[in-house]
Length: 73
Image (cartoon, rainbow, N blue to C red):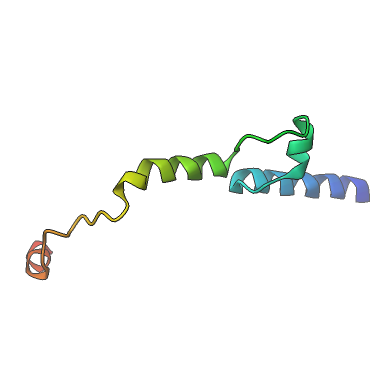
């Protein structure tokens, strides 16, 4: 029963690490010990950073003052 519990716990932790994009030494070892590719949440996070990096510092309402916003509301 303890062995089964440890296997399930290990599987869940690996799954959570994959989704969140955390480094997992077990995955690196399984790929020949080389540098592991990004996986799971890390790929998604990197895609968003690349997609929205061109909009850094952009303000959608910079040309409107409080009076314009109040009128629209």
